Length: 165
Image 1 (cartoon, rainbow, N blue to C red):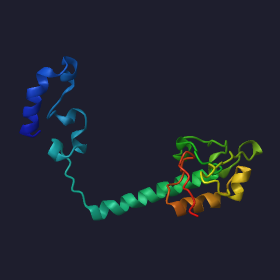
Image 2 (cartoon, rainbow, N blue to C red; image 1 turned 180 degrees about the horizontal axis):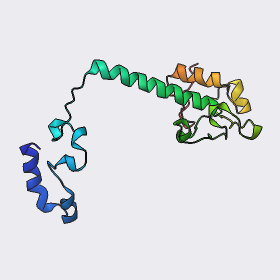
Image 3 (cartoon, rainbow, N blue to C red; image 1 turned 90 degrees about the horizontal axis):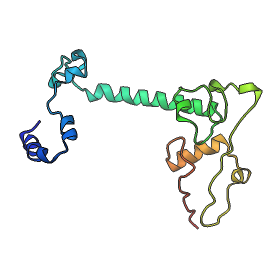
Image 4 (cartoon, rainbow, N blue to C red; image 1 turned 90 degrees about the vertical axis):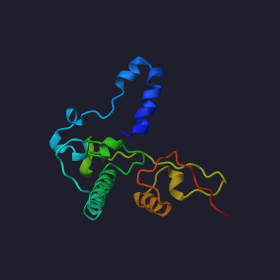
């Protein structure tokens, strides 16, 4: 820890509650929390690690794309319900909000789907045809998300953009 920070804490320590003061730890031996083989040498461990952006960034992007595709596939298989359960999308649950089994299989031979509703525009303009029935086609949802640049699974509480006249 830099000497300036150390000096600052020396000055304010008498004014800190005794229970809080016991919790303050500086320059502690990190090997009591992390195995030395997994701890960088700069923190007292044995791991020699050099970050190479050219190697790690493409791998991170690939991993993110794979996870995004997997979540999108589970979202479609679960009935394309906006507001789907995150645990279902991540693979932690077998069924989604609509009760559909993952991998597109239907539970008990029923096709359960929750209606998707949209907010009424503030300017009173005409609503899209699918909003009148309370349902929205998946392709319409995806197209809207692509055009507006919103992430998948946007929330129904998002503000409605006023249409220009």
